[in-house]
Amino acid sequence: MCPLLFKDIGKMLCARNRKEGAVSQRAQRSRPYEAPMKNDQWLLNVVAPNFEPDTVGGAGEVMIQLTENFLRLHPNVRIYLNENAATFFPQWRGRVVEIRTGKMRGNATKAAAMLRLGVSGKGLPREGVTWFPFGTMLPFHFNGKGVVTIHDTLDRDFPHCVSFLERNFRRFMIPRTVKRCAVVTSSQFSQERIRRYYGVESTVIPLAPIPLPPAAPAIVPATPYVFYAANAWPHKNHEFLLRMWREDARLREIPLVFTLGSGLGALGPSIALCKAHGVEIHITGRLFRSQLLLYYQSALCSALPSLYEGFGLTAQESLLANCPALVSDRASLTETLPSNYPYVLPLETKIWTETILALRIAPKQRFREWASGTTWAETAAKYLEVLDEART
Image (cartoon, rainbow, N blue to C red):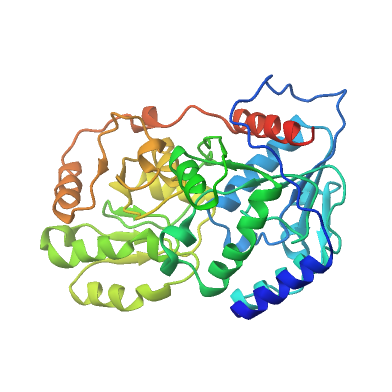
């Protein structure tokens, strides 16, 4: 999809002669949301036809947790998913509206499917209040009552970390979206970036830790290791850890375990080079959440040397499993943890190396006490307040 195509889309949308509405962005909310509101049957639409559960990232996990709680807290919810995603959630049967998108394997086919759906709007809701979990509204000409979640502005802050298609899609759609929808984000850091790039106010609703089910059997290294649960996106900064292990022989006694559920990406040569230096590296691929718990519990620590995060749920995940989480002092990660948490570190290899080596001889601590006490029911209730206000 080339930039000229986005101009053509703009012309088509103008031809529809849709009036651009605006939803006020109110930071202060009034009454707490009572669950369920039995006398208030307004329709809530969760529109996520671009959701792919088999390649889910943090935003997808957030969408799942919030939707589960919307179903408990609100009496009238419809969930718009593509036909593949719908099969992953039999518990939502009766609430799901399937949107036929065809195969969406790869960036090009997914972009083409979303382009068709965005222009036509076929099968998407025309009534009620709509929540868009993934940063942009659908269809492109949406002019109803809506709320959009924008977790980060990665495409503006680190454009090289976002694919060409995704980057251009966001630059075309997000300005349109924030004119027509109220905006929710996950951190004060992201709130400031949204204000800077798009000139609108957003409501900050911090996320809750995602609970892990009881541990399931899994094969983990016998030696305590450093665990990094992340895809191979450039901003996740796996290269920082790989460089540490190559440069300091003391670390080579400690295995590295990466999930890399979406594949090696551009990390293949660096991983091969580390292995040539004698570094023990394990790639697990995508793990079930029950397996994640065992990987955290068996680790020396988890690592999050990310250059950029909208919130940083994996740090909370690690702490809930009583696993110390080493996190970079970048972006919103300092908001994710208490101000006195001891393992928020500058991205300097020497500091990270000495911290990891010190953990080998440190006494056990109750790291789960550092985890947030916020629940998803509380987070969903705050979302419902914003959605309730958007319909008035």
